[in-house]
Structure formats: C-alpha cells, structure tokens
Length: 298
Image 1 (cartoon, rainbow, N blue to C red):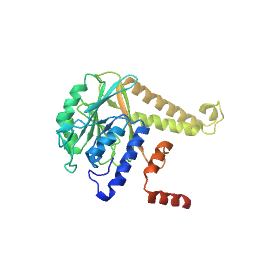
Image 2: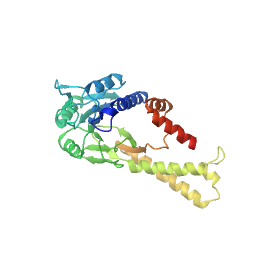
Image 3: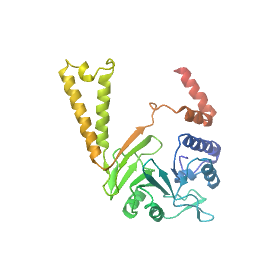
Image 4: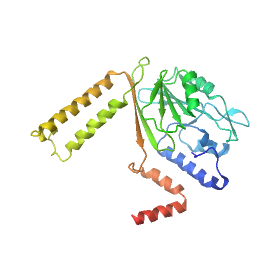
C-alpha cells in the first residue's frame, strides 16, 4: 500500500488516502487474499487494522505482531475454494525495524507451522513471501510442503519460473509493472509440476498467426478454401495447425503443469471504469488539473 516502510509527515494524509484507494480497488476487483508486507505497515498499527476492516478479503501474515502486546495481528493463512480444488495461502514477511509498532517472529518457523496446519486440508500450498533473495533461499532450503512460492520485493520480473526441491518460485517484479496470471493444471498429488510456458507461447503464436490470416475472409469460408490457390499459405496453415495440436496434446498428457503469463500494465491495458473512478477520487487536485490540460493538448 506504500512505496517505503516509512512515510514523511507532510505526505502522511495524502499517502493514506492512496492506500485507501488501493484497498477500495481490490474490493472492486474481488481480491481474495493479501499478504501483509513491510511497506503495508508504514502508516502504523491503527491504520493497517482500519484497512483490514475496510477490506472484503482477508489480510494474512503468519509472523507480523503487535510489538506492544507480542500478539499476532492477522490470520496466518486462508483457504480458497475453487470449483474442484482447495488452495491454501500462507503469508510471511521478512520484517523491518523501521516500522516501530510491529514485531516479527521468525518467518521460517512461522511458515512451516502454518503449512503443517493446512497441508492435509488443501490440494496446493501457496507461500506468499514478502522478502529478499536471502529469505527466499532460506524458505526453499528449510520449509517443507510449499508448492508455489509467490514472492514480492523481487527486483525484476522472472518470465520463466524456476523449480527447486519440488517448489515453483514465482517472481513478478516490483512497482506493479506486471500482473502475473498463473494457470495451473493439477490432477494428482504425486506427479511433479511441469512448466509448460513454452508450449502455451507456441499455441498463442499459432493462434495469432491464424487469426491474422482469417481477417477479411467472408463468413463461413475456411482458411484453406480462401487460400486454395496459394500453396505457400496452405503449407503455413497446415504447419501452424499441426504445431498447435502437438503442443495442446503435450499439455494434456502431463497430469500436473503450470504456465505463468506476465501482463505488462501499460497504456494498452484498458482501465476498469469503476476502478478508474476510485483512482480519480483519490488523485491530488494538481495532478487532475495537469491530466485535463494534457488531454486538451492532445
């Protein structure tokens, strides 16, 4: 909710309003869980508890505590039901001594304890970790039972997730530059998860090429009929269809697989109107004026 684990006094009012807009937007997006990271605590204990009440989704953290009482502030995990699976999300953060009202128990011990509590109730365990490379290495080496480690505070996007000791590590970068869509096919509890990102990329490439060739063709006519007199195009169409089928069949053969699709959050992504209104409401007046002037200029 904040860029740093501290807030300058003169910015406190405005930045708290921005954080409120973020939670309102997450509510609109029907967010289902948020791991509380160090930067989320920058405005203090009362504010994070206020935001927790405002949210329509659970805040989780297995190791964030109230420094004055030494009591844990959030549930350590939450379970999310899909149409055919139960997913377990555990949250931890490395912590930071700059957030004065908070204390943090050992994230390794906290993660393991929470995972042990849910491992027999869920089909997949997602550990949401707010920490650095050192913490990531320690979690992989010492915590058992993680299917997917989803890490924030990572320096850059990792397009091709890595697997280590049965855990798939997802890093989507920082500053909200990318949204990560993780597609998982999970059939049994025995087979290893296989990364099929390259197969999905080839399927997408084939679809894009075939769709581009289909533009302008009269309705009801196939590509083969339209390009009946173009031998090179017919060969290309056959090759693309064959390649697509090969990759689809390969994915189907694998019992457990995943695919990470990073989506750049740039100007090509259209704003959801309801969320855009929330953002506009919380935008500083001077920025609103500048944006209006820019639009007039265009």
